[in-house]
Image 1 (spheres, rainbow over the protein chains, first blue to last red):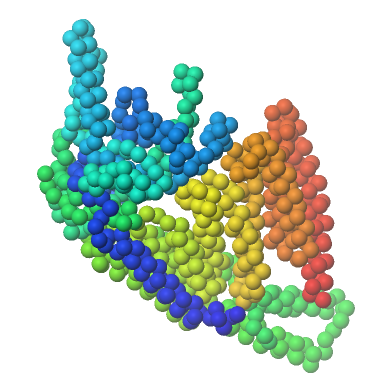
Image 2 (cartoon, rainbow over the protein chains, first blue to last red):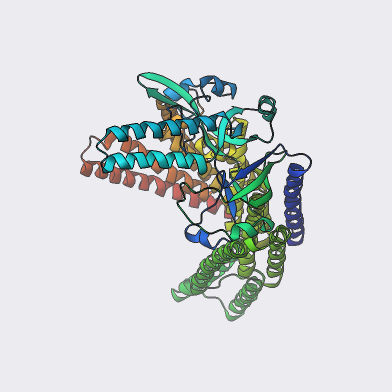
Amino acid sequence: MKSFFSSRNLMLLGFVLVCLSNAVLLLGVRSNRVGEPESLVMLTERELGLESRYGMDRENTGLSFRLEWQSPCGNGYYHDTENDCKDWFDERKLKELGFADLKDLESRRLIQSKDVFIALEYQGNLFRESLKKAEEQWKKEERAFIQSDKGKDARETLDSARRELEHRKNNSTRLFAVDAALFADILRKKYPDRKKVIITRAVVRPFWETEKKHKRVYGSIGSLCVDNIHIPLEHRKLLDRLKESGDPYIKPPRYAVSLAFGKRFEPYIVSVNAL
Amino acid sequence: MSHLSKKEAQARVDRIISFRAELDEIERDGVVHLDDEQAKAIGGYHDRLLERLRGDYDVDLGGREKKLSLGMRITSFAGALCLGASLFFLFYRFWGRMGTTAQVLVLVLSPCLFLLMTYAAAKLEKTGYYAKIAAMVCFAAFILDISMMGKIFNTIPRDTAFLVWAVFAFILAYITDARLLLASGILCLAGFLSARTGTFWGIYWLDFGERPEHFFTAVAVLFALSFVPQKSWTGFSETYRVFSLLFLFIPVLVLSQWGAVSYLPFSPNSVEVIYQIAGFVLSATAIALGVKKNMPDMVNTGNVFFTLFLYTKFFDWWWDWMPKYLFFLVLSLVSLLMLSVFKRLRLSLIQRETEVAA
């Protein structure tokens, strides 16, 4: 036993392991990027913001994009960070995804997450609806302001509605989660436009709430499996020259990115251009 | 003299030193007196043996040396941790300014270079401290390699990373006889097995920690590995055994308090009762088995968790209604009772060790 596990044999095994694991990883990367991409979308800074650095991470010279996306809440308000998709991610959809025993939610037993495919639509109906709702809200606040005492509070509410509309028009992401399925080809058949709909993997989980004595089960997209996209050196020249200016909540985007998702649904940057 | 592990060599040295001290005592008490020839023969034999053991195994020949060795071990561990952290931050500082090819080359070559250094240090330096430092840095380099490659190419995280890290840690542990690296490998292996068990039950692999029962697969594998003959490596069997028990008892403890996260098709309260009973039975079985098979590590781990399960139960039963002074008094009386039980167990262990030695 000791001769088989001699230091020399173990060292050779170690070398083989390092080389093999890296080779498998690189082959996987190649298989992801070879041939026509699964989706190829032209996004902007609105959907691909630069990752912020804090604390010890400030020494990190690597740069990455963060893929920003939204989902509708069903209550008329659309938030950048809210991931509950109460409109379409209902009990029927959850059962389609294999969440069989939803009664466990009520008894407070943990229902675990699943790794599924989701469809993110770029500048689709949900984005247009969110813009329309923001515009309606601003008009409503404008009418209320005209009829009010035009005091400080009323002015602030109107400004807030106007900023929200500007944010929706110029700054917020136009990618919306519109569907989920266990298999990617089910989604691709339903959303064949590869330049408008990204299909990628995400982690989902069911939730349960009581609203006006009515119990409802709905799904929530926790996070995408890959939502940080590393920026290779050849695409950084433009980004390194960018300077912060203006109100970050409403400023327009400064760059456009051609982002591809390969056969393994892993993203990679094709090009970065100034706007 | 057949090939010994470092632990066996140290035990032999300790016996020789104890023998010499005891012989001096009984000679002073007049019980026995060796003549010059006998004393010279025994003394010479022991001197040569101690010299050979020190040269071959770097054992400690006295109490001061042992304390120094402990200090050296702590220092080498701290040094290895700092070097590993330095490696991470060094890469973080410069990788953004490298092209992809350069990044890949640095990441792949680093663990290969440190692996070579580990092997060279293990061959050239008898104490093994430098080899262990190099091995820990090598492991850090390999973790950096796989995780950063995933970051550079935006790959979806996979549980197989834990498996390759585990195998690499085992390789380094067996080259350098380092229990810390073995423990790192065990943790990675347990992570992989639990993640796979979770995937088998349909969950996203990164959430494997949500269901403590996923760790039971690791228990079986690690316990089996503890029976693989590996006396040449110091304390490896015990390490496998202790970790297998930890991965058994900690989930049982969690489930005995939080039944909602169990797979069992019963109400959370029923699940908690089942696991509370299981906790007592399993820890008592570990103690009994440890005594029977002369495995002190198993006895001690079983003891710790039996005590934990007992105190947790006392807390559930009495904390809310019993006056606090009475609660702690009862706990202390139970501790005294358990002390007398442990004394009997200890005596039983010593008797068994004596029988085995005979």
